[in-house]
Length: 248
Image 1 (spheres, rainbow, N blue to C red):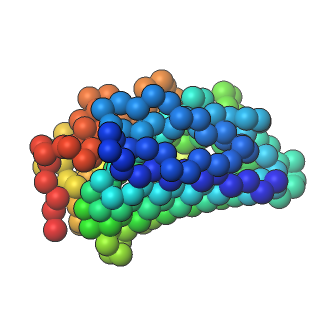
Image 2 (cartoon, rainbow, N blue to C red):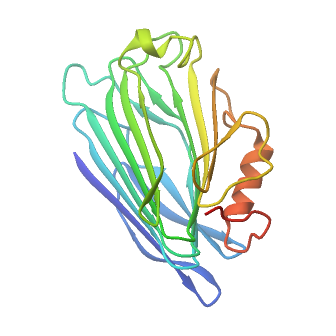
């Protein structure tokens, strides 16, 4: 099934407003009450999650000075394709000058037999900012994970900030000490468009204006990162934030 979800946010007189909202499968976007001028949209699952042959595109646009937060209400389960076609998910986001995208997602669970290709492309204008949080759970309880190839690419003013790929198909490499070892969840939190100069131990500074947190461990509620770090980066990315400065 081919599915397309489109969300466009623009700055209005009293904060960010949703200019366009479309799509029904596999997520049905629903507008939530805004918070301090930030528009919030829930991605509500409208059917079983990723199935064989699914081709999903999520298009996000955040206008100049606008702020958009995406909220997921449940984890996404990639099902066993039973020898059929894999599922494809393409996420394309654009954040214009002074805008902000917040998306700390719920886990993607890659069940045994699943085959998923997911690409996330985020283009920031010169003063655009974003916080992205993602978690991959390697199989359901007591099962091996399926095959996921997830690539995330972030650019700022056309210059690459981040380009990383997670591939779970090679189980020997995946379970090696340099990747996940015996962990069942891989988590990443990214602050892009601005650096955190006081990031805690374990965080990594990108070559440009971005700070990264990566971790492996057991599946657990609340993410694979310190809750206070997610809150700090969320506040830092919002248009009114002045505590962190861009790094050229």
